[in-house]
Every structure is written in C-alpha cells, then in structure tokens.
Amino acid sequence: MLPATQPVPPLPVATESGPRPAKGALALAISSLGIGVPLSAIASSTAGLPGLVVAWIGIVGVNVAFAWAQRRI
Image (cartoon, rainbow, N blue to C red):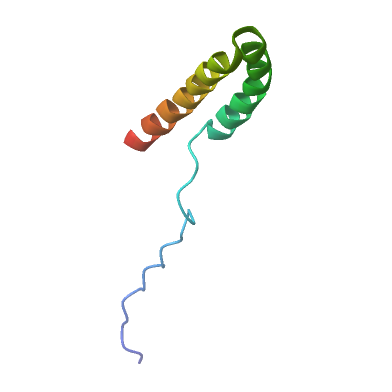
C-alpha cells in the first residue's frame, strides 16, 4: 500500500514579462508626430521661431500630461 500524498499545487504562470505601455500611448505618439509636422510648418511660417517653440511646447505638454496621468494610475 502506498502512503497518501498531498496534491502539489500548480506553479504560478507568468502573465506579463514586464510593464506594459499605457493604453493609447502608441496612438498618442503617432498623433503627436503626425500633428507636429504640419503644425511646425504653419507655426514657423506665420510666427517664426517663437511660434514654432510655442507649438512644440504644447505638443510636449500633452505628452507629459498623458504620461503623468498613466503613472498615477
């Protein structure tokens, strides 16, 4: 007669290999570049270098706000 043994629980399965990018991060990156190119042309032709700087500060600001919001979740 064999001795009674305890069932061995299954090993946990890793579901993620690392941190996943935030949902919509790729779309925001592509949109930022897609909007940045024509916005740069318009801003620099109408307002010169100051307009170009303001336009890119706005684009960077949107990306930073998105990243900050995802980090707080």
